[in-house]
Image 1 (cartoon, helix red, strand yellow):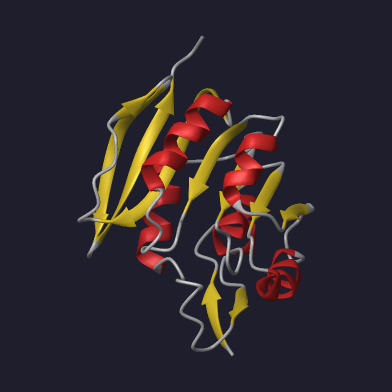
Image 2: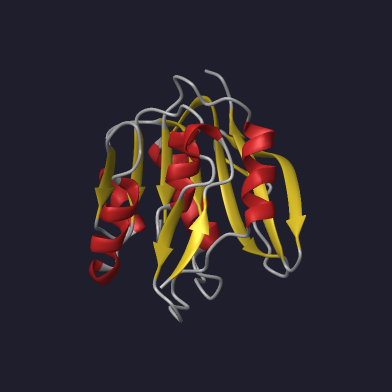
Length: 183
């Protein structure tokens, strides 16, 4: 078993497990996570949703920096046990949903301050997912959607109430920040 290190907050330095050789879990690079959470700043009192959670490292980074409530969505039942074990170190409970993200987006009845999506790079429905998130109101007014994707992919600049406000490149990948308009 390998491990990932939490890069900041109250859990900084703690390690979580990632199955060795599991290419389905693509651990976000330490540098990328540190950069993203530096941009986001303190998350005290802000809700956070981590979709395509894998090991749960992004949810833990958010919880470590004060986000609450925090939730994870990971469809792969084989990863669920590891995900639940990993997020159990958080100071507050992190809800884990084992369901395809597309179904979660349609059924979710709450909005989050920050939604982070890290779909597998071959996932070909990223633009549809952004539209579905915008149409479904998953991001609260003034909230953010972050999506991690291969730099060669093309994503919409806006949809509905979501508009791209920033973009950061990390090697061959990019994270785009969308903000939901205030109503």
